[in-house]
Length: 367
Image 1 (cartoon, rainbow, N blue to C red):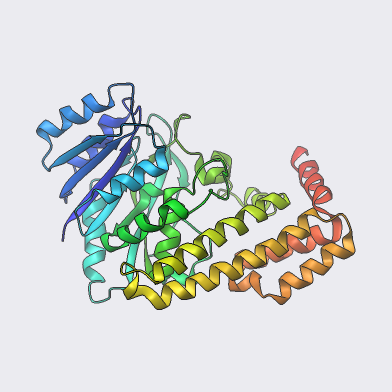
Image 2 (image 1 turned 180 degrees about the horizontal axis):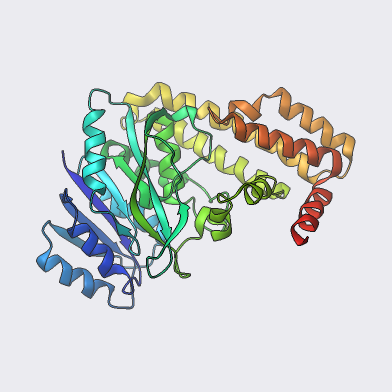
């Protein structure tokens, strides 16, 4: 088995050397490191070249002729890898020395089954100096393998924690141009990690590892904000009251409309891939995913009316329609609690209106 590491870089000189050193210190070395640089203006390329001269594995570095953005850059790096499995690597984190050996052990243990197409592990959130916080992200509680459709739609894991099977790459590359805008940040294409997770869940199973295998460094200049919404959402996982406040956060109708549009893009991608040679072995699953994303798009469009209608009776009509479509449990997989939270929030908004619920929450947070 060969494991490639795909790294996307951009002006990463501040922390890059530490990350590269952690790759060289792996108990199970990667078989190759593929670096794609997105037109850095600092010493990033020089640092990679210095590392390549002494690295205990092959290092290939390619510089883009124009800036692609971090998401497209990662997808390009993945497409250049030659391994059977591909571990995504952020330029500013640090890997625990047992990361690749632990993942390889789990891959071998599941070798009798070809279902797992993606492995995800936990990490420790740290500050810029690698001082650890109490927060684990992703916060995976136990080792397990989950069928993709048993995971909620839009439940995704950050790129630095992903190790994907190489035969996903042709599907990802084929569908990437059509993936549309990111539902949480509509000004950019759908983030590569969100996209990878959704395609993986559509065709296979996801392996979960509770082991902390990386230090996830937050330093204020990261390319992304956690959960696309800032570090406050990471800390919502610490303590009961912050978690409740975060769960009952009231979004605008546009939030649900964007999720509906993104789901339609994914439905279209799955339908297209199902009829290509690349997706032939997963045709039935891709067609099933196509139907599921289409139904989810309809359901979230219905939910958007609960948040934008001014009449309580009209909001309640759309609430009943959303309940009738059974989406609160259908689209949350085995996570019934998340579906119940969504239903409770929609009921509250249907009765009071989104502006009143939002004002109530804000008033409570000031006390």
